[in-house]
View (cartoon, rainbow, N blue to C red):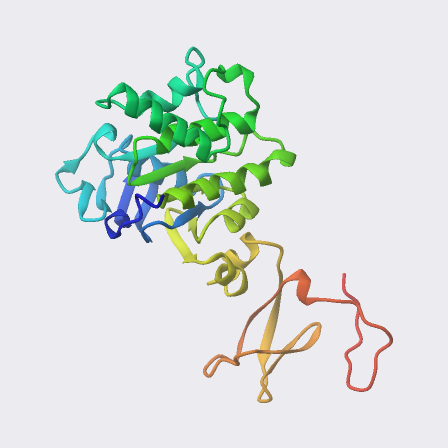
Length: 304
């Protein structure tokens, strides 16, 4: 379909600030750009401000300062606060939050106001087919599994053709056996529509496997925003390195031969820094391996 994939769907958050009282800042001059059609994950520990960011983008909270734009349309800014229903933003809340008294089809069609009956039925069937639930329209939410409920929630969010989709830790209620499959289904559905999407999560694996971009938030600011590969291989600082994946962090000193001396021995550098003599070396588990008896020039030691 890719009906939403237009340049006007780029999300731009600039200088966003929010406090819940004196001395209680939650967001501090936060900046974030998500290209049109991309899936971005906002990743961070509890209390970092990621849910507050999502609620401001959705229009549920007012920012103290800063702007939120989708394309050339200002949603939040000085003197501007569009209500949620006027933002063209779809929401997938935690645990789906389906209406228990409505059928699956009526849940999906809930946001299709001002649409004639035939178009509403066609769009509902199209969305259910997109999320792999064709033929489930007459079922009630309690007749679905947790993963199916999440897919219905996504179909409901996508049905009105929003410019932006926000997902608030949507996989938390699912057991580990279901999560990987549902994550893949959700990503495929978002990509099929071309919707720009922001996923909030504290799960590193979820962020790295689902998103095109990952924004790591720390203390109300974006510590680093990069592709999953760049974030994992080239973290901005030791905190990001340790937060995203398993990490071995060692003090090191750069030698003239392009290696760095560490407590584990000399480690080769792919691109030795020109002006840095000492720092922290990051080793990922897959970069380490056990070898046989040492040979000439090898370093002997014990890893604990």
